[in-house]
Length: 228
Ligand code: CTP
Ligand code: CA
Image (cartoon, rainbow, N blue to C red; front, side, top):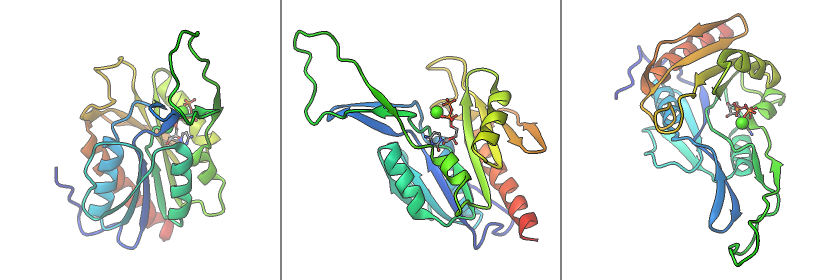
């Protein structure tokens, strides 16, 4: 797929993208994770670079090639992702596509847990930092802050609430109902709703690269108008 824009509408802009899952270790051989291929985020990073932006891509563990012209920072956990995002600021635009694990194991074991003959161990969890919400109230908040929301029901309503709660400008909401194996996750296509302050746009189902193109075009228009 070739991303092509008229000129370089994002020249001079720094675009920060998070993508992929995070892995939260339980012990040296086990982890908690979300289902995420990273494809949508990598496509957005590629599209932003093709549009002339300087792009920093903070990526959780995924098996995808770094798009041309993109600076990639690899992380494992949500806390590492939060640190990498903070260290990448300032940015003009942030697009948070990562499926960040909401919880981590409260007591990560140094040694592999053994089955032995005892009952299965209980997993105590604690909450991870919310990277998007932290950016939303930061004094280094990017001028345009975009979150993603994967929902299995009431997609747009949940996305509207998230937009306000996290002080994002836009939320790109997608419906991930449909079950494991036949869903958006890992697939080539995406069907999204762009939730903005003044309304919601329902985009037809299209390849993730086209979602990325369309979103980057919208970002370019928005940056042009906010810059005067
Ligand atoms: N997000 C984040 N840091 C977290 C959790 C989420 O930056 N610890 C970002 C995601 O990258 C995404 C947006 O917040 O852009 C929404 O993520 P989502 O998981 O849908 O939101 P949550 O607030 O975690 O709500 P839920 O209970 O539905 O998981
Ligand atoms: Ca979550």
